[in-house]
Image 1 (cartoon, helix red, strand yellow):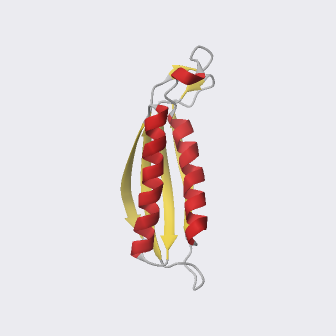
Image 2 (cartoon, helix red, strand yellow; image 1 turned 90 degrees about the vertical axis):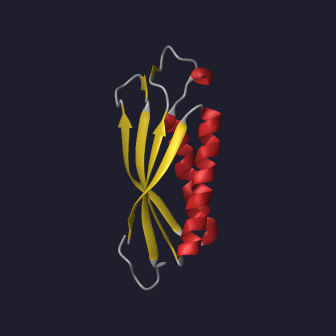
Length: 121
């Protein structure tokens, strides 16, 4: 993100590591899957909604899925979230809300999420 005078000035990048259980999608009923890609998808939507509600910016710009084969339920999703806000306090509140929603969804999905700060800019 390029900083301009009309954009919030505090920015950080966080790595989200979602883990689940690899399975074959044709053999595993939906209710028995532990699919980190679903947890990630909800987290993307949560980040977008929370950023919009608070007049901040949040977007996942890079995603890696493993294994990445056809017919496979993923076991790992790694994604990088860039966030920007007017102040460090507003940014921390946004990230805490996104993290909480990701953790709640992970619990429902039988997956796990770990959030690691990576860069400040």
